[in-house]
Figure: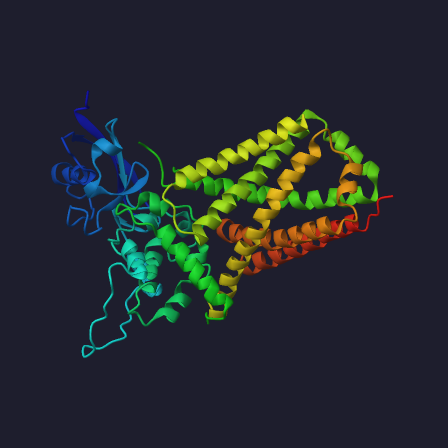
Length: 241
Length: 113
Length: 119
């Protein structure tokens, strides 16, 4: 027998002060966690703050901590995470809370920049296109990590980020690894210097929380392992500055 | 389904690796020291062996063997992640490494009693 | 982080992994030897008979000690940096002392065994 109502504890407050407040939300068929949060804001308390956009798992803006784990709420069914009808919804760990369920993500995205997560072009508009075959090994490695939506779930579920504020984290390093395998990119030396060391890939302990929680089923642990090898051997040869 | 970002096999494996590493690092100087004393004086070693006959010490030794085996198998697991192609059966690998470690402890225990 | 520090960090990481490869082999041999040695009871004369003055075993334990003296302090360094409020400078000093201590006490024991002549 299904419960008529869900009991939903939602974090209300900012990073310094706040508490979990219980709400009763009617149980619906095929209900997602984002539906539940939206119901609370529309029908019970319009002052509830949260972030969402696409509702179909593309934009990466609706990540929250659901029953203890970081999840994308728009694609997380209530039936999957709360078969007993009890739900707790909080902001993502590690990032500062702006209000209620909205977190400050600038550190997270600044680390992408710090990890040289941008493409360094080597050609101009007058040059011909590079021909990169889909079966090319490096192309395959890059493709494996390219579908990141920047939701911050891996980052929020990583203890190394929690222990080391300066650690670049799984998402930024995964992004860097896709570019290391982009043969068109001209910024490789700067990138290797940016992602090596104890604030970079060598801090990772392969705990694999990122692999476990990534809603896109990407594998940052494997990407970071690739970076570890490349940078350590570069350091051995004196290739790092 | 309550839990945390830590409730998965590879995080527990990380925890075991860290704890076993710390305990082994603390044990190592004692190990070196006792052996050094033993070289100079057979009786020290044999006194130590006599002390080690007590069941409690045998259990403690078994724990040490399990710790060493856990750190070995967990370490090989980590080296495989970092230096070899990725395998998708990570949880099975954790199960195998833990199982091998417990089996090693049992082999030691049954041989020592 | 200064650029040369990155170089050091990456090399420390590699040193810990390379020593881990050595230790993996060493620990397997060590575990097998332990089980072999404890069968029928452990005694000083048995250990001395096996290891004392034997160049092969002395080399094995010598390499084993050096590998662990590289491996363990780098691991402890990461743990102390992550889980304590000690400054990284202080952690480096502690781990350097730990490495030196392990090499000295370990090799001292190996040499003592090597110089034993079983009569």
